[in-house]
Length: 249
Image 1: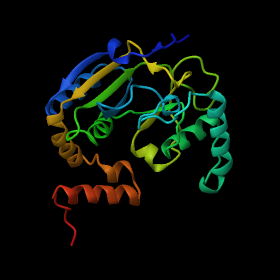
Image 2: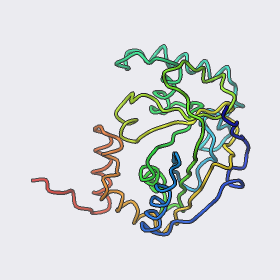
Image 3: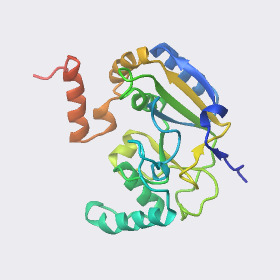
Image 4: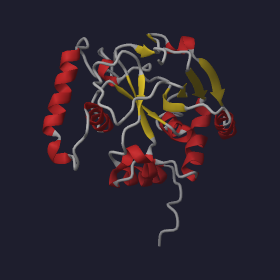
């Protein structure tokens, strides 16, 4: 049986931490992890973001909080029931489980007990530096060897007793493009705290250069959000910084 993953309030205190100062530093991390034969998933975010807690458990008065009131599991369940009931006209297929419904809701901005991760370190780097650079450092989290839920089995996401990785079916183009996976948290108010967690800090000075290199690797808004919205954001980003739009006649 898989050992339970500890949940606590101080992820940074139990994780290793390294600093990335350039694209070459990031490439060295990729090379190192690729040779380990270990299953990693990654998450990128600005350094001033919330600690590793799902949005459903982020309570408080600040801008990062999903709730101004104390977390209530009954209200979380009610929110999922309402989403499932009202989302039917917008979903072109029948989700097979509450976990699939949560994955859809999460990707469209609803606060759930899922936390977004990716199997691609480059994708995590993109989301880390997306809003960083001018506003401070960025972070990439990596976590290894968590137990994985069987997507063909029915799991009650509100009954799990430890943190699991959930790899959904490719329910929409964004999930496919972003190599998305999720962690499912038994207590959304508790920060992820495990010795399987690694953290890399991307220095503020490196963020802008990484954005340019990632774009040259086709890791950008247009590729990760494969729709008109993503395309418009990508073209707008290139326009903002005076970058060439490519060979368009």
